[in-house]
Image (cartoon, rainbow, N blue to C red; front, side):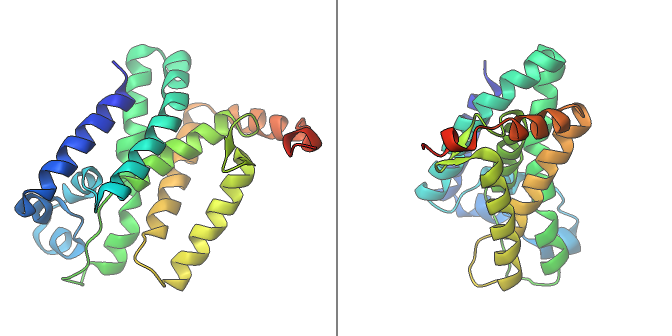
Length: 208
């Protein structure tokens, strides 16, 4: 069975369960102060299975569905079913953990700061997919590599402005991890990605 569907199923069930059990939310949410003071390091991962509301849950899980179904088969093809599955799970789960690092470093003395959501892991999968399909994949009517540039700049800019409650640093760290992890496993993807961009028919791609 697809790991992507398993991750989606587990996340939906646990998010719904936590909405009806606030004690679970309190125990699992990313609270940097609790991690720092009580060494509750599990929160780095468990927070990725919680979501704020239906919209938050749907957006993350739909994105994982779309891009996971691109990346997971590629990992299976290149690394074998068992090893590929382990590596794909690591891409997603470690992405969740890595994406929480900025919040931990910034807010470890803030008792009231909390964060939740699978955005870091989802960003890891999205940017891994972009490496495989920088041109053939279209996101918001843009070639995937153009979206990656826009997304990265926007996330960096918004993380510096700090004018909303969205974890832009988490998105950026998750995306960076997805790129780094995938290239470590398959370094030739970098040159392949560049070659696809160079060979791109720009006029055709933009519908002219």
